[in-house]
Image 1: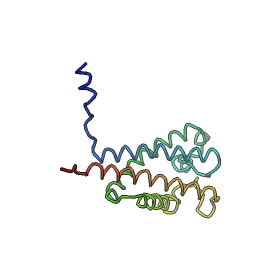
Image 2 (image 1 turned 180 degrees about the vertical axis):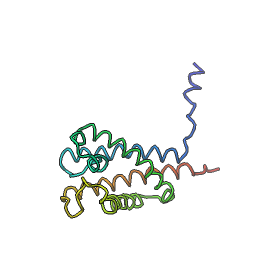
Image 3 (image 1 turned 135 degrees about the vertical axis):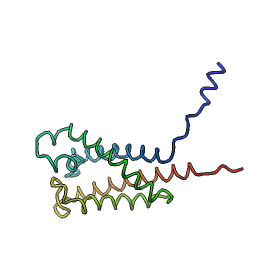
Image 4 (image 1 turned 120 degrees about the horizontal axis):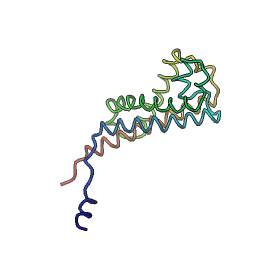
Length: 164
């Protein structure tokens, strides 16, 4: 019985903030691109992850399937790990919600404006509907806040020194 109590009190070794940032990126990629796919399915948005990843490069029937959406969510999650590393390197020391909001808007601008010519299945900014604007901007802001707040919280929590 005493050994059992001892095992329960053991804590797992602490994970580094960098490893947590990568995990946060993967989880946020799954979460927010899945919500983007759901918003695409219910016609809140004209674009989904599959529009960027598959439909822009292959014009086949399977790119409109559920399989394409699932694979696109996984691929976006892998890219999201890299995006979270960018946040970790640049903004991890800043507390609050605003850095995440700015990061999400900047990411939206890069993807929808700077990289838009690469994605043929994504309409130009002036051809998108109002629902797509609102849905996409909100998803990117929430994505940025999720990554930003989580990473900065973990960074500050890890670097806190206990009071003596």
